[in-house]
Length: 340
Image (cartoon, rainbow, N blue to C red; front, top):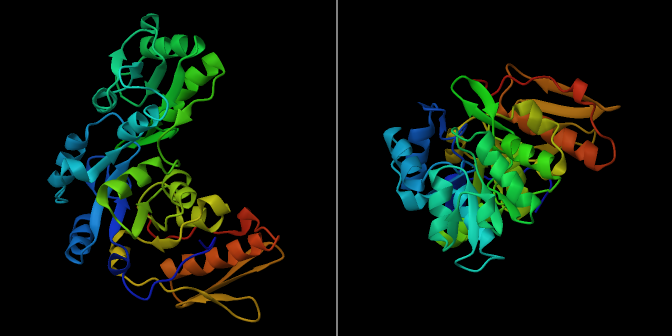
């Protein structure tokens, strides 16, 4: 698949049969709705696009996630939710037989997923677990992290649901599971395996469950959602309603680049023009153009910046970098598109 942007002359909801939708920063923000999310996802469904919500949060059960989405006018069934806890359990099954002892350090979602995968759950390193499954839960403390460290130090396989360093909350960014996993890693010196994004494991599980042939990943984070799309060979839509900004996309390394960029989920219902390159090096999309001169990004924008500006800037910056002339990040301005 191309390392650059893709174009679509029809709305994405008409081109792809399954949307793998991230939650926080895409479908909602904390406990608050995101503008246009409900209406856009509803309209995508009416066009025949199926939805599976894919989250690196391993603390909650799929039914709880579905209930929250439904409460935000995004009707969802539990089977339309794929969590990192389910992916972690699937990863455990690649090496362990049913009945193996697993120390679970995490919330109810991870406990249920590991139990349902056929493993015996223990709470202490002294119970001789063969693996440690670690996921985020706000109630986790030193005692649980210590048990994980003891078990890993004694040879237990360390499987993390995900490695997100931060977790968006209504008050700002708090330490995520990756930060807590880091404490166990620092204590043991053992690098864990991870089932969550950017590993494409969850995407593959969701696609197999849905029997889809043309999936589209939708996310707000380049380092997890869109990196996972690239890793799995799936097209990815970066919506500018969450963590990663338009500027982040423009300066992104190849393995983090989105295939499409949209201001919000309304972009599912829109065509995505592909920037064109002229002989003099300008990349043009709509009323915006961009080129790179001596490592500096130059923009020519009629009016205010739009998503087309981001598309032109990204195409110019990525092409220059791929040709061995990386762009100086200091020359890339903040693009006030999708700000929140």
